[in-house]
Length: 170
Image (cartoon, rainbow, N blue to C red):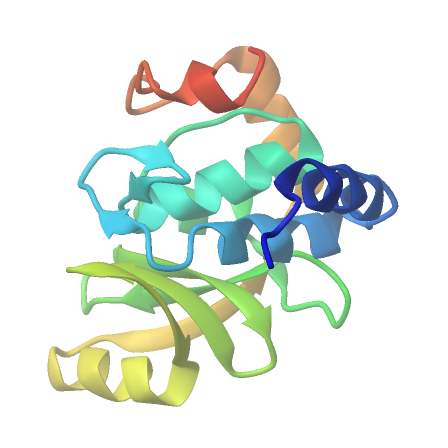
């Protein structure tokens, strides 16, 4: 038996179009599962931690930004965690700098893009590791108005990879 990929992807597209933004965010995080950790990248094939979150934000909202974990923490995810919204886990050092970010899939579960690949992980396990490094964990909700503003202004810390246009019409 062979998989009919064309039919599968047509169904998947219909399901995606019926999803909320938060569901689309999770979907695009999951699409990156087992993608290579590639510093400075933001594609389904591979990304770094902030690239994975920025890619999922772009795919779910249509708003494009490409920035760092710390910038996401300080300017985009500034709301309290929401039950059915877009959320991310940040790992904050003693200088109040976000040194890592992971997109929240569900309560206590994240997609963690870290060497060597993006994996689904239990948040308490990752938090323990970062605690040993002197970091605390904060879960924050998306401030959509801030995301819209930054996207309108074209705020990016990193330039988009050429491969990005392979997956999205910009």
